[in-house]
Image 1 (spheres, helix red, strand yellow):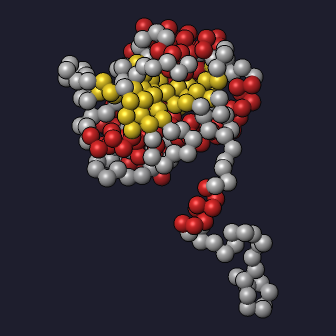
Image 2 (cartoon, helix red, strand yellow):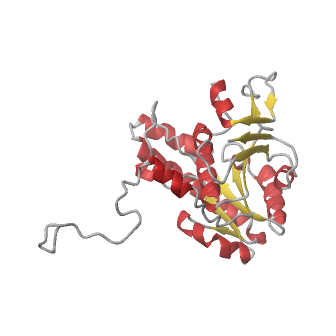
Image 3 (cartoon, one colour):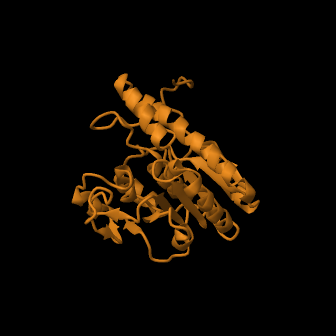
Amino acid sequence: MDMTGKGHRIELASGLSAETLVRQGLMEEIGEAGTLRITPNLNVIKLGGHGVIDYGRAVMHPLCAEIGELSRTEDVMVVTGGGARVRHIMEVGIDLGMPTGVLAELSAKISEQNAIMVALLLSAWGGTRIHAADLLELPTLLRLGQLPVTHGTPPYGLYEHPARIGAIPPHRTDTGAFLIAEVMGARSCILGKNVNGLYTADPFTHPDAEMIPEITAEEVIEMRLDDLVLERMVLDLMQQAVNIREVRIVNCHVPGNITAAIRGERLGTVIRA
């Protein structure tokens, strides 16, 4: 509304005042400025619900001890998946005709429950359950020797993108872990699974499937595999990523694998942008 009576618009002085914020040239100019990496030494470790946490004490107790000891010398953050209970609530929700956004809200509750349990398992090493709103507290928490744990479901909630096929939310906990690592400017993003890496087919049903030690996100997409060990959305996001230019898939049922991955040893599958 023109409050001056002079027939002209009042604008705040700004170098972007005349911009639409979608001009390609502007994007290139801003891109050269660089951004602050809030936690450049952080290693984000995603523990899958279905592939890791649901296996219970036999897997989780030694794994948490390994991560806990690792956190004494490295900056570590644990991100949890949902697992079998997410699959159950998805089935119920889909049967009742729930839209994608509602399914995202429901599945988030399960990964939150896993975050609480994992934080308690890590309490001897400073395990601290945090929420999405607490991410900017990470520098302080890490400096204080805390081991932050959060759930991996991205906070889209009812704003979740409807899937092109079906209703299952495309942004799930692998995606959430990747987005946290990307936004925080982390050092690495490791996806802990119950297989040794990415295979040419599901190794549980195809014993002759070959493991792929290194590949690009685009190459994985072009392979058009029927099933994947990680969410397809991560592959799409990687191609546009600024900070996280690779993710590593490791079998965290094997003691020492997480430690080896963080220390740069060759194991699992590395997917590069």
